[in-house]
Each structure stands twice: as C-alpha cells, then as structure tokens.
Length: 416
Image (cartoon, rainbow, N blue to C red; front, side):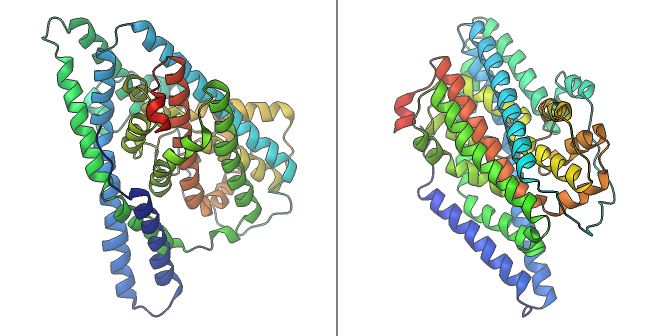
C-alpha cells in the first residue's frame, strides 16, 4: 500500500488557517501598498492555487481510465459490473432526492425569503445549461480524445468500461495485457501522493485567494438563507449519510468521517468534485477498504451525478427566491422541484458554481425572476466550497455501501 505523507491533515488545516489569516490581513488592514497586495493576490494566491488545482486535474482522466480498465479487465463475472452500476446510480439519485426534499422542507418552515430586500445587481450574463438530450448524448462520445481533454467524466467512464470489457475478453490473446494497466494504475496512485504532499501550500493559496478578494463579509447579505443552507448541508452530511451507512452496512460512523476529513478539506478548498477525484479514490481504496473495481466506477460517476450539496442549494434558492418574490409554490410544484433537481444533477459539471447553471433551469420552469440569481451568486463562493465537501462525502458513503453489498469491502482496512 502506498503511504500518505505524515501529519497531512494537521498541515492542511494549518495551511487553511494561515490562508484565512493572511488573506484577511491584506483585505482589512489598509497598511499595505496596493502594488504589494496585487502581487500577493496574483503571483502567490492566484498562481499558487491555479497550479495546485491544475496538478490535481492533470491526474483525473488517466487515473480514472487506468483504474477502471484494470478493475473491469480483472472481473471474472460481468454480472457484478451490472449490479455495481445499478446500485450506484440508484443510490446517488435517491440521496439527491432526499437532499433537495430536506432543503425544501426546512425552507418552507423557516422562510428565508420572507421580508427580504436587496440592492444586489443581477449578473451581466446568466449561465446557460444543456438539455437532457445533450447530456445523454455526451455519454457516448464521437471523439474520446476530445472528451478526455474536456474532462467529460461520463464519456470517459463509458469508454473505460468498453475498453475494460474488450481487454477482459481478449486477455488470453494478449499475454495478460491487463497487468500493464494494473501497474500503470499503481504509478498514477503514486503521482497522487506526490501531489498531495504539496496540499498544505495549495490549500493556503486557495483559501487566501478567496479571502483577499471577497473578505469575510459575504454573510451580511441574505443572512438567513446562508445559515439555513449551511444547516441543511450539515444535517445531510452527518445525519443522512450516517443513517444510510448504518442501515446498509452497519459500519462505524465515526471511523468513516474521521477517515474522510482530508478529502472533505480538499473538496472545500478546490470547490470541485472532479479535481478531488484522485484524493477521493485513494482514500476510498486505501483508508476505507473499498475494492478497486467498485471505487474506480463509483467515484468518477459520483463526481458527475452525485450533486447532493448542489441539490440542497437549488431547493433552498428556489424557496428563497419564490418567497422574496411573493410567490407561493404548491405541493405539486415542490415535487417538480425535486424531480428537476434530481434530473439536472446528472448533467451538472463537477466544477465550481456549476449548480448555478441548473438553478436557471428550475427558476425558468416556475417563472421565478432570473435576476434574483445575483443575490445567490453574491454569497455562493463559500457555500459552493461546503457543498463540494458534502458531495465527495456522499461519493465515499455510496462506495462503501455498494462495496459492502458486493462483499468487496475490506473491513479490516476500514477499521484500522
């Protein structure tokens, strides 16, 4: 097993604290020359965070490809792959439905948009999403190189499965060529560790970049919306996932969350489920004991379609905007919000603030004012970081459940 650098969690948390501290000093104290602030912002925080995220993204496609191909090519039964696929997608969509329902219930009770007024200007240009037709079509790429270059994870997963199946059927003709993919997968896991070693510096730059630009005052706007959204995110992460883990696996909940803290911090700092894939894959396999065949399928798919945190935001934002506009949504419309959030989560890109795109679709469906998205965007940066942490925690929880159901979870590793 490839070893993770020692004291990594402590060092990452230290990097996060220093990022908040240094960023706040430059943002709030008017004692630094503008040229120094610009230099620190551009050449330390912006450049450092961009390099770190690019290094993480560099590994996504090859790691997913080699991991998934080596896993599928070593399967002795193709029925197992079908079972894993069905359980994974069913569980992801179910937890997303629970997430948005929880958000709508809390929003209906506490009414974050009641009596709210704001002068925040609408965004100059609203983001555009793609329809279900395009989303489905993207799963079947006409050019796999282009799909890989654009990090289209569903397309990469689909091609990897096809390649793995073909390799499985021809392994006896190619001199066990699948062993080469196993070795390449090991190499890329080592690359993950090498990049993780720089995580404290990367997290320092990512947090500093956010604070030196926006400060810590964003919660002054739409305060009730922000507090309610954070509350629902915490409830879903620690209650919903704990319940499904206990019901389906009876695993130790404390152990699960303790081993997921580094991944959650990574996700928080990058705001991207996709950029966190290498870290999530390693933690799920090496720390939680999930078999590679399961992890290499569940995690990349989860980074694309498991958007529980985003669904919570969409539900709360819809309630918030409807209430501040004086529009009462009916029970049928609530059900429609749940369905739309689940469906659109499949096509949401695993990149920062991508949930805003699908929020446009939901608001248009119910005739709610699109200009109100300006309010959501004003407070969305830190909330997006929290949502991503919830998403990757859900990816790991589902991986454990699917692996346990297939008797592919090493509980000795999990409990270690």
